[in-house]
Amino acid sequence: MGSLLEKVNSPADIKGLSVEELNALASEIRAFMVGGVSKTGGHLASSLGAVELTLAMHYVFNAPKDKIIWDVGHQSYAHKIITGRKDNFSTLRKKGGICGFSKPSESPYDTVITGHSSTSISSGLGMATARDLAGGDYAVISIIGDGSLTAGVAFEGLNQAGHLKKNMIVVLNDNEMSISKNVGALSTFLSRKITGRFATNAKKEIERIAKSIPAIGDKLLSVAKKAEESLITFFTPGMLFEGLGFHYVGPLDGHDTAALIEAFNDLKEVNGPILMHVMTTKGKGYGPAEKDPLKFHGIGAFDVATGSTKPSFALTYTDAFSAALTEIAERDPRVVAITAAMPEGTGLSKFAERFPERFIDVGIAEQHALTFAAGLAKEGYRPVAAIYSTFLQRAYDQVVHDICIENIPVIIAMDRAGIVGADGPTHHGLFDVSYLRHIPNMIVAAPKDEAELRNMLWSATRYKSPVAIRYPRGACKGKSLVGPFVEIVPGSAEVVREGSDITIAALGTMVTPALEAAERLATIGIKAEVINARFAKPLDKETIIRSVASTGLLVTVEENALAGGFGSAVLELLSDENVKIRVKRLGAADVFIEHGTQEELRKEAGLDTEAIEAAVKALIDERKRQRITA
Image 1 (cartoon, rainbow, N blue to C red):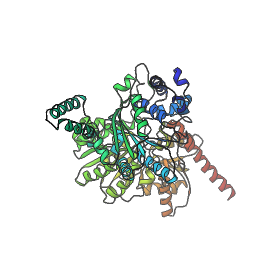
Image 2 (image 1 turned 60 degrees about the horizontal axis):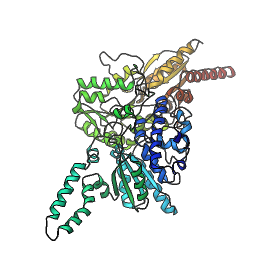
Image 3 (image 1 turned 90 degrees about the vertical axis):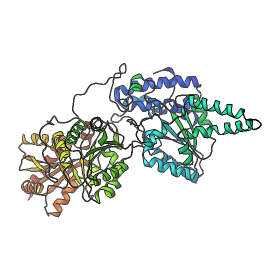
Image 4 (image 1 turned 180 degrees about the vertical axis):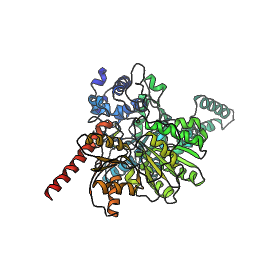
């Protein structure tokens, strides 16, 4: 740790530094950040690009009284380091350590929880309105990345802010990337910049022509100079934001600390909403991250000297999905793949290389993605929208209104379903079964392994109804992904282990630990029957009823919230069929699960082999006691 950084424990400690010292501190922060993330993993490239911006904001404003609101939180590591969490930075994203995103319960300097994009403007406008209603005097600064402006909620906030004319600053951190390269007309518009050569030549030509006109030349030149700012605004994104009612400033060099400080000081005195446009370099200051910002957007542990990560040869569920979809598309020209700014994260980049004309990246716009998919499906195509489970939450109404009411056969591939690990509560996919299974016409499926995922995906292209297939983050089970496809009929479960003492009905990721628990139980004489449910909706009524009628006891296991989940669906089935047996449901409790490794969090949530084994033993012992006392 450098000498300047050693002395910084709060934003107050940087306010007396010179610009030269702030620049030196920025270098120290970058080195400290790279060293820390190289051990813990994290969202590095975006945070490296926002160091000078962070220092300038904390230099001018007085957080936490003044509200600094980060969008997503990918950019906030320097903010964390200078707001009292430097000594805990080595615990980043570890269980019990500091969060990888902004988190108010962690620090008063973190104004709102973040993790999903495009929320900072609306949050900031709400706080600015509350300030004015209460007669407060604090500043509100919302920082949003350029990629986040592809989401409609960002423009809803901009539109309302421009109308209300509240005093607030929106900082557009423009690095020309969200996670992957930005797409769409808006991104193209933001990338239009007036070049130095064009501006200089145009200005010289206007001056030459004006001066050549007798009598009125000087007056014309004066008017031309006054129009210069309008000219620049026209050729830059300022035209858009001025039209929305913002005072536009920029583009500014986001790594020029002095210029940023001067701009923030000036803007403090301006009334009304302000859009400050800054240009930054993703991965700034660390060569490997500048060269490959996509790789270093979210990265695991790596070697600082080379930027190389430890190679992983394990096939992931994302890999399996990618391979299966590409194989299916080879055979079926109706298949179209859709992503919401996550081609690499969802595995669709390989599909895009093979079928560029059938691949669409809509940007950070999950709502649009699903309604767009519905339009494709209405015209006979088979769209597959690959969206993380946690981000699908943003498009719930589109699932209901635009897909399910008309029973349109859109396929939703829900990556990162269940516990995801170090990204924590904003990214766990623990609610999708609950918020999807009650929607009429929706099929909700969950494979036990990658081979079943492949067959489910192929089968889904043959269904006449919408289907959501949930699968986890992480390594596969080592099953083969070659051979003919096998159709899986909706609502068809399979008994993967026979038994007579108790039934374990497991969904998706929980089938493997359920089988492991059954094997352990067999060593002490308990014969557990294990059902791979495969579907949370529709349920395989016959298989479940037949099994529990034989065993008399049931444990359901799911990597989803207990409330309204797979276990609840089974209870509803048993009630409807007037089957009265003892049931124990295992799943995520009614709390938000924090960050840690998947293994740590599953164990804590009671979703591992040991927890299933314990639940079975408890029910068996309970039945024995009841028989003794009967």
